[in-house]
Length: 72
Image 1 (cartoon, helix red, strand yellow):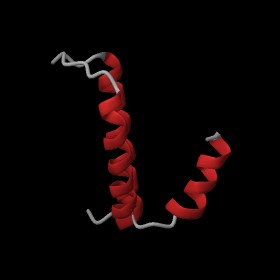
Image 2 (image 1 turned 45 degrees about the vertical axis):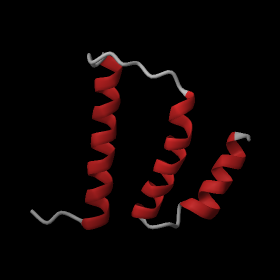
Image 3 (image 1 turned 45 degrees about the horizontal axis):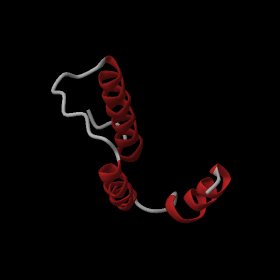
Image 4 (image 1 turned 30 degrees about the vertical axis):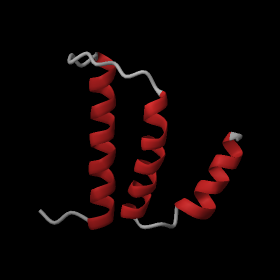
């Protein structure tokens, strides 16, 4: 599948879904992919792991703020 096809599917089918449904879809996709990947069982977090976690946390906070607005 090309990037254009993935983007078309996202725009036509996924983008309009509520956040909870998009997260459920993402979970299904990731659960399908993960078993095929080699799993690193090291308990230490690499710099890349910390970076990825930080990016995800900030994106999640931003999307939550966008959806609910600032209430504090």
